[in-house]
Image 1 (cartoon, one colour):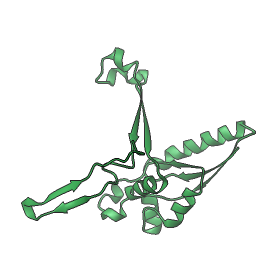
Image 2: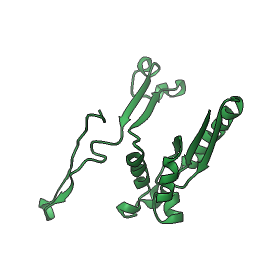
Image 3: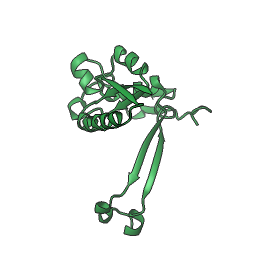
Length: 169
């Protein structure tokens, strides 16, 4: 089986983590004669801002959408904190989620033995923690309308709609 992967290292610790992910993919690919993994690397987030003055190029989005899988590192960092909203690295992540229909984020929680004593949980609970949080990423506060602000001065109010459709749930 052949799979094309869009490899998006991102910023900050992202490239370092993605180097390890690439090594793992190469190791897996080299051990399975029926598996053929190929990947192309694309800039997103701050790296894309620095090179192209946009967090996500249209060309990159089209390339990513044509792949079988996307492997994305972290985006953002203090270097871009003062950028205007449209020029923030996180805009790439939000657009990828929306345009590619990436609806869930998997967040495993495991307490390693060396960290049990650092947990606020009792040791016997912390040592047995094995949890997977599935976080929805495309509805609700992320992309629902209407949103905005109204009024002036101390009477100014902001609003953001939390709305979900049947298919999202």
